[in-house]
Length: 135
Image 1 (tube, helix red, strand yellow):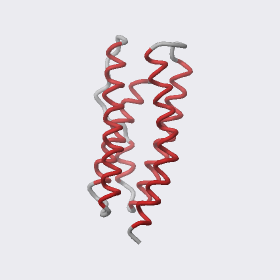
Image 2 (image 1 turned 120 degrees about the horizontal axis):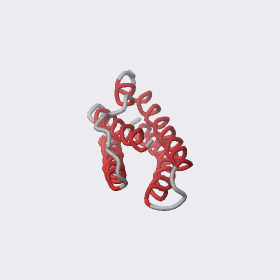
Image 3 (image 1 turned 30 degrees about the vertical axis):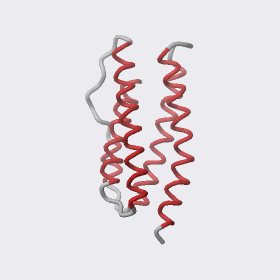
Image 4 (image 1 turned 180 degrees about the vertical axis):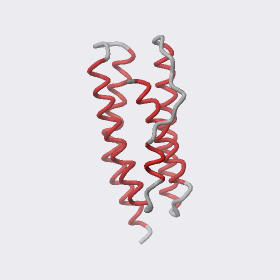
């Protein structure tokens, strides 16, 4: 389950990198690159968590980046990115139910789920604000 989350975070970082290179508003580009950096930090943390607990981190990237890239409009891509955050939050919560009741895996998964839930709400509002700022 941790490797699934790892692959998903890598895919999110790649999708955000690609999307940031295609958007016009500079503020939106900076927002997307900041989100990309957060996804990359999550991936690095998951890799360390897997290694530190005797596992082998996957070297794969999930299919999400290709799904985002296949959409035509920036708005559609941003909407899918938001749904992707919701999906990761749900998967982190599912993994949390399987994790030991305390310790680093539990603590990380709880924080990850909470961050992704908060990012969904904040991200939607911020994207709407940034897209409307250029009108």
